Amino acid sequence: MNRQVPAHPATARGLISDPAGRWLIVRPTGREWWHLPGGLIEQDESPAEACQREVREEIGLDLLPGRLLVVGWNPPRRPGSRARFTFVFSMGRHNPEAVAARIRLQPTEVDAWQFARPDDARSLLHPDSAGRLTRMGEEIYTEGPRCPVPAVPVARLPSRRESNSGP
Picture 1 (cartoon, rainbow, N blue to C red):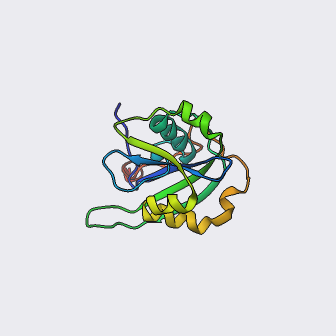
Picture 2 (spheres, rainbow, N blue to C red):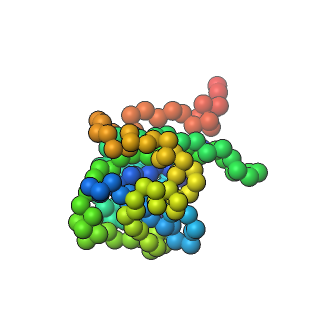
Picture 3 (cartoon, one colour):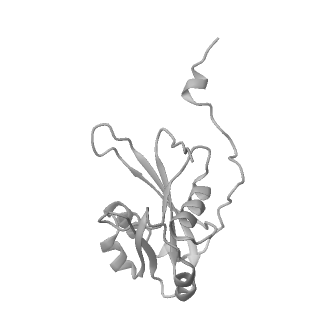
C-alpha cells in the first residue's frame, strides 16, 4: 500500500479508558516512551478517520472517535524536521476484560499495552502527550458530542503544485 503523508505531519490518537478511569496506553515497537493508540493522518483523511483506522490497525479495536479532547502542536526539534499537530479523541469507557479479549497487537508497530492509572500513565507517556493530558484534567471524563467520521473529506484544498500552475 502506497500511503501519502501530508506536508505537515499530523497524528490522531484515541484515549480509551475503563470505568475505573485508567487509560489504555501502548508501547511502540522499539521505543522507550508509551503513547495513546493512534498514528499518522494520511492525505485526504480526517483526524477522526485516522484515529479510528490507527486504533483498529494497532490494537484491533474498532471504536468510533468521540469528543475531540485536545489539539497539540510540536515544533520542529532538529534541523530538517517539521512541526507536527496531534489530535486526541475520547474513545469512551470500556470494560477492561472485554477490551483485553479483543485486543490484537500489530507487532510491527506495538509490542505492549496496558491499562494504567492516569498518574502512572503520565510517567510512561512521551512528555508531550503527558503534558497535554495533564492540562486537560477532569475535562477528559466529561461527555460531549461525537466527532463525525465522514466517508470522504468535506473539502480538499488544492496542493501547492496545483495552485501554482498558472496560465
